[in-house]
Length: 139
Image (cartoon, rainbow, N blue to C red):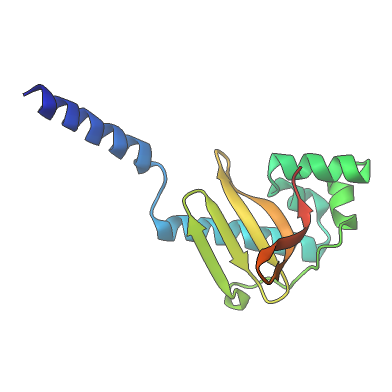
């Protein structure tokens, strides 16, 4: 009987750990919402809202490279603003706590943090058989 108890405990632990993660569709929707928030704020020139959806490492990199606040520095970055609408999204890929959202003129990479989905790289363009080239990313 001890093996049954261990199996039940292990199964219960797995259920508890995965219960907060949400379904793939829920994570996909949440990542897309964060990407749309980023693009809309960038298009509007709202540095505070752009920084609110950036991952901590990206915010720190922006502040360090611009030698000013994230709110001011992020608008100096060469990230192409797009008129972000959900119907303009070319693709959303989610794998675990990572996501990629593809717009016609930009690709974003996001990670899921305790406070929600945050942008870890933006202004990314694909390169054949090489990693994406991103204009905005964390250190």
